[in-house]
Image (spheres, chains in turn blue, cyan):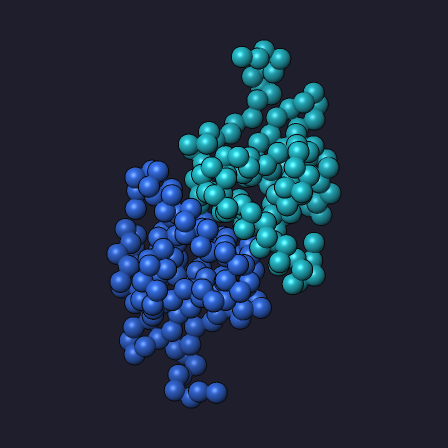
Length: 117
Length: 117
């Protein structure tokens, strides 16, 4: 138990047991969300939402992060005024070994093939 | 060239180059569609839509097959009066090596964990 975080500043996350493959795949089925996940995987640390210069509105960015968080792909915590996001790699790797890495490789291959990113 | 199939009985499919990762992941982000894909992978041959006893209506089943076909996950052809479906494994494996196998393993793990299927 920690009492350092007020309830209103805590964000809902599924526990590892609550994470479902179909929700994870849905969260990954969008180009902007794949871009976020790739950036988080490359950074290998928590990033502030403002670190992502996505070509969409702030509210759309917030929506994408919520989908990623509610599916269990990303964990988000408040650090002061900043909302920090990180990949839940250990949870995903435990539940679905190798899946995240193969999705990330598929993103890279497609980006190279289509010349995007 | 074959002239045995009339144009009206041909179904639209993306070519290999037109297949997009985000569309594939979306097609796989539904429990019924994952079940179809798992059955096709296990059968390792084309199956008639009637071979799938899904707990949903016929029109919903048709919808799921259309999503799978339009994303490039499944190929469908008419054989007489039967619509046959098969996994486009060689296309998916060429574009995204290992991805389909890891999704199928993840389905099996989740099914074992949750006691469904």
